[in-house]
Structures are given as C-alpha cells and as structure tokens.
Image 1 (tube, helix red, strand yellow):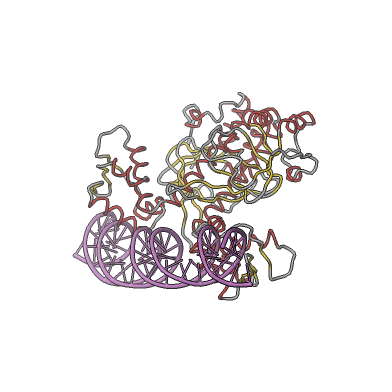
Image 2 (tube, protein in one colour; image 1 turned 90 degrees about the vertical axis):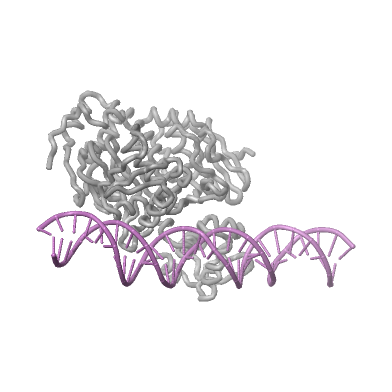
Length: 231
Length: 231
DNA sequence: CGGAATGTTGACGCTACTCAAGTCCCGTGG
DNA sequence: CCACGGGACTTGAGTAGCGTCAACATTCCG
C-alpha cells in the first residue's frame, strides 16, 4: 500500500542527510522514491536477496536481524524515523546482509538503487556526508555488538528496558509505563535471549521491586537499579 | 624507527585504494606519510585516543581489540599488508574505537588525518572508492562478529586454525605446519577464549588425531575434520 | 465455555569460566 | 654437567549462566 507522503515533514530532513543535494537532485530523489506502509510479516527486504533499494524510515520501527544456523534469529538493532536502511549493501554492491522486519505498523520510503548510487557518485558533498555517516554507524554498530556479546542476559535485559524508558516514557514521572506492543518471544529476541530466560529475569526484577506488571505492560519503578545492573 | 620505504612496491597499490588519485595528489600523500616499524608492546594507536592518523599496513600483522569492563581484551580481527586501519575513526571524527597491537615485528605507514581528509574531500572518485570499501568492511566485520558470538569455543578454535593453514601453509602438503610465533595466551585472545579452555580444546583435537604438537608448533593433519567442526 | 496461544516455572545438562595445583621446558649459575 | 628457578602450559575441581524440554497457569477469543 502506497502512502501519500509529502517530503516536507520527512524526518530524514531533520537528520540532514539530503541537505547537501541540489534542488534538481532533490527533485529527482523525491520523484523516484515511493512511500510504502508495512505491517509485521511483510519485510521491506530480506537477508541474502539482491540489494535493489535503500530504505528511509518515515514512521514506526524496524528490527534488523540475521538468521542463525539453528533457524533462529540474531537481532542487531532497530531503526526508527529518519534512519537509513540497506545502504551498506547497495554501496558495497552485495546482497542484503540482514532482514528488516517492521515491529508493528511502519512506513518507509523506497529509494531505487540506481537513483541512490547516481546521487552518491555525482554530488561529492553528498558522498562525503554519506561517508561520515557510514563510518559513525559502523563504529556504533560495533560498540553495541561487542557490548552485547560481553554482557549477560540480565544486563542486556536491564539495558533494553532502560532504552525503552528513554524512548517511550522520557519526561514523564516514575513509575515509567512501557506499552510493549509485542509478545514475549519478540521481546526475548530483541534482548538476545529466550522467552524462558527473559521471563525469569523480568520476574527476578519484579521480586526486587525494580519493575512491576500491569496486564501486558511493564512499569519501571527503580530506574537507578536498572542502571546499576546494566553496567 | 623510521623505515626507508619506497612506495613502488607498497601492497596498498595492489589493493587499488589509491589508484584513483591524480599524480599531484599521490605525490602529496607520499610526501606526507611516513613508514614506521613497530614491535609488540608499541601500538600505533589506542582505543579512546584522538584519531590523528590513518595507518596503512606494509608488513607484518596487527591485532585489533577493544578493552572489556573486566580489564580483558576482546579481539575483533587482524589486519595485514595492504589493509587500512583507523580510517573509520578519522572519517567519523571520533577517538579510535579499538587498539591496534602488532603481532610480532610489523611496519605501517602513517597518513596524517588532514592529508587523508583533504584527499577524501577533493577527489570524488576517491571518496566513492572509500565509501565502497567502508561499506564492504562494515558488512564483513559484522559477519565475523555475529558468527563468532554464535559459535562456541570449539568451533572458533577450529576456524582460527583453518585460517592459519590457509594463510601460512597454503599450497604445501599435509600435515600443515603452523609456526605460532606467540604464546598460548595471545592465541587464546585471538580465538576469543581463555588459555585453559584453548589448551583443553587443542588437546581434545590432538586426542582425536586432528592435530599434533611439535615443540611450539602445531601440525594440522586432518583439515577436513576441522572444517566439519567449524561449521 | 472451550481450546489454542501465550506466558511461567521447574528440572536438568552443557559450556566455558575461575581458581588452584601440578608438570614441562629452558636458561642460568654454581 | 647438573641442580635450580621461573615462566609457560596443562590438568583438575568447582561453579555460574543459560539454553532446552516439559509441565502447568493464564489469557484471549470465537
């Protein structure tokens, strides 16, 4: 389903990636891209398939993951409004290395591979901006991967909850209410563990008064304790 | 100690990174860079320090690692002749994310940050080539990090031995003789485990006739078995 | 109300880390 | 030439963490 989307309010503007394009180039980009609404189960792109386009998130959130030998999934991170997805594969001229799954309803703009590559080749300012962003993204990716591979499930769980508080409940007063629109298995994947271990960890936190449950939601009552555990 | 190094036989040429520079730009690069010999214990750059230069490996091998909370080290990989090191940090304008330790005697050329950035900004063909390389490196890095975090110590050990055979004993007939210039603790770091576990794993392989020992060296007698284990 | 999906809890085993006690190797000095 | 000492390496015992399987509880919906 194609969404009617004006580019004026696009979150990518705020991130400044396309700021250095000329008027004509921007027009070209805008007319070649199209916005598309995704629901869970319909991923914009899949690990191993040819990299035909770059995606720019407009709304919602996407989960980036790789398949594991056992048929499981290893989550690398999530991307939200303004983030670019799939550009590494397009630039390196390889198949996508990961799959992008929407977590709930989401919208992303599809920028055809050739349009993107032409812009990256002809506007040197844009090329350089891309280079900076790619370098930064690469370091941050590595930061997270290494940190997660060193930390244990308890720490990863605490950190993930902290991230959710920062994103969904920032500014409000404690206890912070986390909507948690998806089920335990999904949450376990995002944390990097199994539903069983996640359940034990969460109820362990609850027993110590750090969090509480209310239906499907989680209430974070002691953010300081989470910080201590996550470190 | 500065090495007298002509650029004519530089392995970086073969990799084609600087192929798209103009004659004048290449001259500028060559005159601003200087070759330096490193020995273990003297690293060209350290995690957390300002990124003042890009390094291009001429000879030997460098180990890239991050420090862990407990004071240990997490090895991300190694770089050899023709490889570029530290360019992510320079491009992203951040401190180095890793430390590069020479594994034995090694030589690398230092390219000052400003020289590198000027080239990356003024020659759009070079910028694009860098972009391609960075994108590819980023994917490969992620490949390895994820694969290593999923595999167990046994599999990582088998894979590391296979890599050594491919690099140091390619072409010769089995049993493949691995020089192993460094001690067990270093080897354990490179594999991503402890000396104790490494020792047990290695002697487990030996008991099954997959490898043998001869003084400091390891003889790989059954490469097929290693392949099977590593998968 | 019933049944399926989802979530929780228990039991158990495996992997790999830590600490500690050897054992081997090799260079040094008597 | 041999005894000694120290570093490198190995081996053993104990344990933490977490995944798996299975039983049970709860929730959600038709």
